[in-house]
Each structure stands twice: as C-alpha cells, then as structure tokens.
Image (cartoon, rainbow, N blue to C red; front, side, top):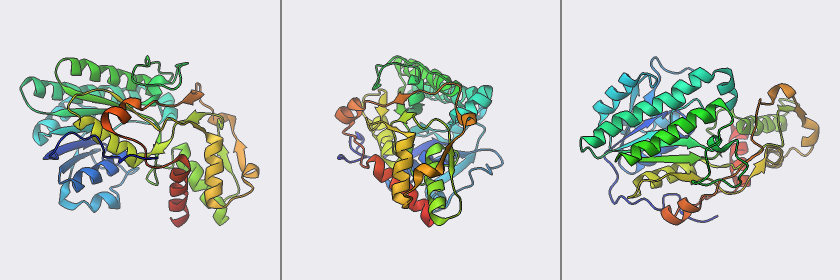
Length: 336
C-alpha cells in the first residue's frame, strides 16, 4: 500500500492548541503524539478522579509539557463548555466514546449519553464560538456502525445511515449533528472510522483478544480461544494511519465527512488465521471454540469502506496491510 499518512493536510503551520477528548484511548494517544511532534500544545481529557481501566500510559507521560490533562465529565454540557472556553483550542478532536457494541446493548442509555449527548455539547460550544468569529475546527469521530444495517457494500459518504445497535444509533445522532452545525458555518468534520487496530487496542476488543490469546497459546499459557461469530467480516486498518487521516481531514480547507477505511474486508476467522501464523500456532483449528453466549443480538455480516474521497481529496492511503497489522499486534503480545 502506498501514500503518506499525513498527506493532504492543508495548513502550512500547525495549530497552537488542540483539544483531544479521550486522549487515553488508542487513537487519542497516537493523535497526541502526532500533534505534539508538530509543535502543537495538546490538551486532553480524562475522567474525574482518574480511570482505573485506562491509567495514563507511558507514551503519554513521555510527552511531558506538550500534553496538558484536564479532568472533565464529558456527559456534563456545562463542564464541556467551560473546558473548551478555558483551552480556547484551534482544533478539537472529539474521540471519547463508549465504543463497545456489546456494552452498548448492556447499557444503551449510558452509551447514548456519552456517544450522542457529549458530541452534541462539543458541537454546540464550538458552533457558538464560530458564530462569534473564533477560528475553531472540530472533528467528530463517527463509526462504520452507522451503516451496520445497510445492504450496500462497500459504504461511502453517500450511503444512507442505517444503524443496527445502540452504539451505531448514538454515533448516527452525532454524525447528523456534525452536518447540521457545518451547514451553520462551523468547520466541522465527521470521520467515519472503520475498525483500526494496534498493540494499544484494549483486550476487550475481539482483535486484541485474538492476538493476545494466540500469543498465550504459543507460550503454552492457555489451550484455547473462545469466540462468537467468526464469520463476521470487517474492514480492519492500522490505527496510526486512521489518526493521520483524521488530521488531514480536519485541516483541509473545505470541511466534509470522510470514510477512513482500507476497502478490504476480512472475517474474524481470517484474523485468527493471521494471528496464529504470526504466533507460530499451527494447530489453530483445534484451539478455537465458539460460544453462542458471545453472539450479539444483531451483527452486521460485512462492513467495508470506500475511502475514495479521502484518497482523492486528502491524498490519504493506508500504509499497512491486514496481515502486517495483525503481526504487529502479535509481536507486541509475545514481547509483553
């Protein structure tokens, strides 16, 4: 695959300040590192009182004074408004979300508050800033799950939204609001993110569960891996590529929505095969057990994105193949 991940950024000078919600997540960390490397002061949000499930990682500590952390309750619109007002960012990347489809079924109300109401607060505050003449740009992280109920494949920016689970529905709400605020003059972008992985992906995601378990099998620590629907197909990319695409999208002179995807779908079983090969596990078929309890109420059979707009307008393209992404995750799990 070709193309520089930072291609297409229109700004000649990096912004002075950027606000990244969800900076402790996979994407937030890579984004903070990228922005800091360009000389941007990064402000990131963490949950009040800290988050025991997402402690401040070494890669964030390494940024030193280039990263300023703010304890903020993103479900409180007044707190969001106060934070953005105090930081006065040139760019806002709203990445914070409850991003597990399974958890969204268990807690649809909490998912709606964080994934629909919080971005609404971010857009409302930034929209008011734009009306006052402030130069602020906002990117809302959307999701391929907004298309989960569609029969169209691949999906692009013109595909009608058709969510099939509470997470996708909340993301669809934020996606629509982004377009509405853009129509009122805010430089607002929705980046439709297809699944993207890295060694920083939490173990609650099936991709990391598979790579970590295959590494454990290779070490002799466990005997099997238990999965749900291994036929489900997804468009898996490399997280740093997607983060660079978000920056390029936000800095383009004309705001628009962008699908960021590889354009190639793989099944969960193919991911198992790639992970087993990278870990040196030859008898992987004997190691996989399916548990019906892990099947979701609804599960899109295939989500694959058409990133033609990002390729042609931004000059963006993935830099790592599916096999390379899985191998990098397995290598990290074997080392760790």
